[in-house]
Amino acid sequence: MRFIRRFASAVLTCSIALYAQRFETASVREHRGNAIRSGPFQVNSTLITMEGYTVFGLVMDAWNVKDYQVKVRPDVPADDIFGAMYDIVARAPGGRIPTPDEARAMLRALLEERFRLQMHRETVERGGFALIAGKRTSPLQAHAGAETCSVTSRVGSDGRSVQETFRACPLDTLAERLTKLSSDRPVIDQTGMAGNYDFQFVRDPSDTGDVSASRAANDLGLRLVSRKVELEMIAVDRVAKPERN
Image 1: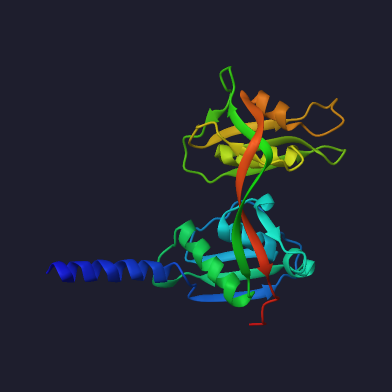
Image 2 (image 1 turned 180 degrees about the vertical axis):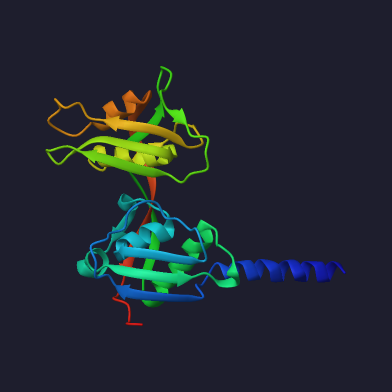
């Protein structure tokens, strides 16, 4: 009886692993429209649709990393990973909605099979910032609902954002936005503040440039501390255009 239980447990574990490895069906087509990848990776049904994705964007979502965590070998054709865009419609097996981690595992398998992706992992140390709690009370408002993170932006006549509104976002999203404001020096969330928050970036009309990363953090009752940070990198060694389907 004990052997049967162990065998059943092993079969269940194997079944879960197999479920997470492959989409049941997947269509990959060249993107012909104007849409581009935007927003966080979301899984809301058994049918997963991705529109206007480069291979670079697919790698980011498949391994759940930021753009500065993807390294591409110089001999990989730039158009194959940065230029060509694709629409993907894939169905998860088993008739149930996969978890984001399961969907990412299936997306990794799709990249390996259809795009002939080859990669390896690296850990590098580079200069960056730690996002930490400030000395004063933070005006960040905790979001009590179950919404997914959303970001909206109001753009001024000069073409720059004058107000960015974040709703139901974790502070990792804030760290990612601050990274872009800090000339791509990575910002790592070390506040220890879990959960989702509502907050805004507002640029003073008299400012001639974008809001600085340090000022944005200070306005939210947080601080940026310069320090060395360790980053896990996804290094792309090879990729090819997918076959027509």
